[in-house]
Image 1 (cartoon, rainbow, N blue to C red):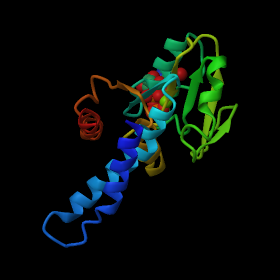
Image 2: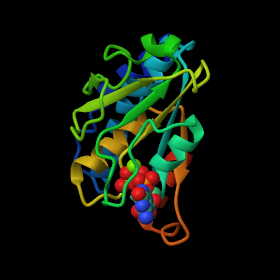
Image 3: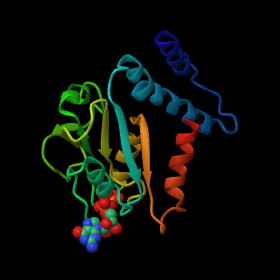
Length: 189
Ligand SMILES: Nc1nc2c(ncn2[C@@H]2O[C@H](COP(=O)(O)OP(=O)(O)OP(=O)(O)O)[C@@H](O)[C@H]2O)c(=O)[nH]1
Ligand SMILES: [Mg+2]
């Protein structure tokens, strides 16, 4: 399968769609998205099938993502808050034995690893804890529809790297358009 996917990526890269026909811009975008998805997620995942299942908690600001992550883990690993948005930098809780899977060489290579809370968009905080079982990890993400552009971009990257999305919303926000666009993309994937 790996050989097949690498060939598929090569074929897509070679299919440059050079003619400016109607609708070509959307097709070029789609082609690039499929290449990115293959390079950022599908091929790396296939090369490390034993890696823990990465669950990314996404959704609107204030929906309760950080609160839910803390409740699932059983103690406070990420800071909830009343300021919107609160979470600006992702927090990844995992079993201590699984730490080797979350190095910069294996996952989200653009993000620097830190071991303390931060608001730096270019960092990801790793929290090793025995409260998370081996084989699964949970990531608290910034909101998908933030007023902060960097938050939105980061949330998109995190969701693309996920094996599983846990989507959080509230009675007031469930019909918002932006989260629904993400869910449609996920269904398409
Ligand atoms: N009254 C009160 N409400 C709080 C407090 N902390 C969080 N909340 C509320 O609880 C809800 C969930 O907060 P969070 O878990 O931080 O929400 P979130 O989805 O992680 O939000 P972002 O990180 O901004 O994307 C929000 O409506 C908050 O305003 C607190 O200390 N006091
Ligand atoms: Mg949060």
